Each structure stands twice: as structure tokens, then as C-alpha cells.
Length: 370
Ligand SMILES: *Cc1c(COP(=O)(O)O)cnc(C)c1O
Image 1 (tube, rainbow, N blue to C red):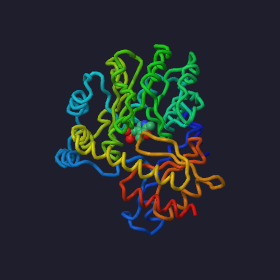
Image 2: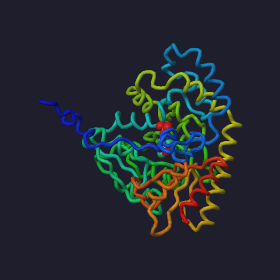
Image 3: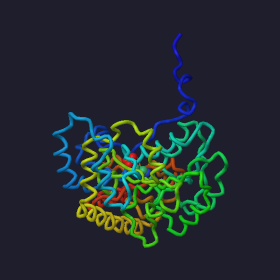
Image 4: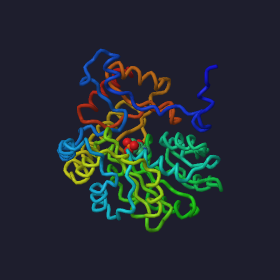
């Protein structure tokens, strides 16, 4: 008799469906019979400038040693992070993308029958990881698409192990002020962890936007996660990090797979961290692109959620189906991101591209909406 492997899977895994990433460029190129360079992908919040020159040079050097295992301790990258962030080596956990850090915190602290607290419209990975542990995901309704921090604090119960705060949030682009964050952290019981996901930290200019790392001394239950996938332009290399108290970092490092960050990623990330020119131009391109897109939305009479990230969610006109707009944009070689699975069925999320990419998107959108 054939074995039903689904029945053998651990309970949390049985009900999971895989994370849905943005549509890859080569897949659409194949479907449309187009050249990959004719496709504009604004679907995964990647850096439209491509990798920076210092990161590329570091990768070339590191290539010479790819027969060797990477430095499992990530000494050079941690050193660069310590200098940049003013933290100690013992506070850092390196991840294969910051998604790894989210996974580690779940595996260390979340048991079968526990729960995590997230906001409505939060990053899908949190709930996925929680269910994998057999834990519940308590979702608190958003207010104006942003986190209801009072509601989230009130939702914490004796089974809650971790609360996830995304600042700014993806896919809404909404953000939390320092005052709001501190007031929230003051309410969280000290045995409940707070994972502050700052994947888009580098893009935010607002004066009262908090730097989570500066709050670690006051809140020993806080873990800050950041990534090299967005502003630093290294999404394919998979490298991110967590910063926390040394006690928490020690625990997170216990579940970290050996050599979880490869040597090209380690070298490129350390170099990218110090390529201020590239980072500044990435942010400048984002600022200009954000203006370009919001002006176009205004001109088209489309409403959007003001965003401080490198992406923006806009609403399709009444009577128009967002998924249809997405599909028609695909036929014009433009990939954006449907966000119906984020409980935003009337919205599409578009990443900020170069001026030329944004123009292609805007023209395609105009053509699709007439
Ligand atoms: C992109 C993103 C991440 C980072 O993903 P990586 O694994 O570092 O590539 C984390 N959180 C949010 C909310 C994101 O949008």
C-alpha cells in the first residue's frame, strides 16, 4: 500500500503552502517569448541599481576561495557591522537572509501550542514560520493599514512568545514613530520577545523614525533584524543579520546551521556596508522614484498608501479587478505584486525602480487602465 507521506509530516507542516515570491524575470520572458532585458520586474523590492562596485569587487576576490568552507563565525562581516552599528560581536547573529533570523527566533522560543502576535497586512513569512512550529498566529487588525500597537499589546496572552513589528511595514509602507514604539515596548511583558523587522531601515528619512538597535540596552527582550537584500542590493546572495543582547544572540546562534552564510555573501556584505556612495545613490534613486510614482498615481486619480520604503501599494479604480491589472501588466512585460494574500485585494504593490523602469511601468499602467 502506498505511504501517505502527508500524514507523516509534522502537524504544523501539513496545512502549509509555500511562500509565493514575485514572478521571476526569466519565467515571464519564456512565457511571452521576450528577451529578459525587455522585462521590468518591480515585484520584490530589489535594488534597481544592481549590486554596488565594492560588493562586486569583493565577490571576485572571494571567488578564488570557493573550494573552502566559509568562515562559520563570519568574523570580517561581524567586525564591519560592529563598527557601523556600534554594537559588540556577541550581539550579532548572521542569517542566510534576515528570513533566517525570523526562523531562528521561532525555533528557539516558539513551541507547539504557543502563539505569536502580528499585524494584519504583515509579512507572510511570520505566520508561515509560526505554523511550521505548530503555533498559532494571532493577527491584530490594522489601523489605516498600519500596526495597531495598542491592540497588539492587548492581544498578548500567556501563550504568546514573540510579537512581530515591521518598521516600515511591507507591503503597506506604513511606519511607527519612536514614541509609539517605546510606548509599545513598555507594555510588552519582559518574557515576551519582540522581533523588530527593519528590512527597509536604510530608506527611511523621517526624523522620529526609531533606530531599533539604540533601544536594545533598554529592552532585553528585543531582537532587531536587518538585511542586505534591499538597500545594499544583494538579494540573491542571501545575507542578513539580527542584533540583540548577547544572551539572545547566543541562543539564536545555537540553531544557526553551520556555514549558513556563504563566503561570497560574507565578503560582499562587508564591502557593501562601507560603500557609502552606492548606498547614498540607491536611496536617492528611491526618493526620486517615489516622487515619480506618486505624481503618476495622482495624475491617474489612483489612491495609494503613503510609503517610506522602496515600494508602494496603490489601489485600482472601483470596478476594476487588481489581479486583472496585474495580468495585463504582465503581457506588457511589467511584473508587479498582487497583495490579495495580504488582505489587500484591491491593491497592487510596485517596487521603486530606476527612472526608466518607473516610466515603463507608468505607461503600461496607463494603457491597461484606459
Ligand atoms: C525583504 C524582507 C525581508 C528580508 O528578506 P531576506 O531574507 O533578508 O532577503 C524581511 N522582512 C521583510 C518585511 C521584507 O520585506
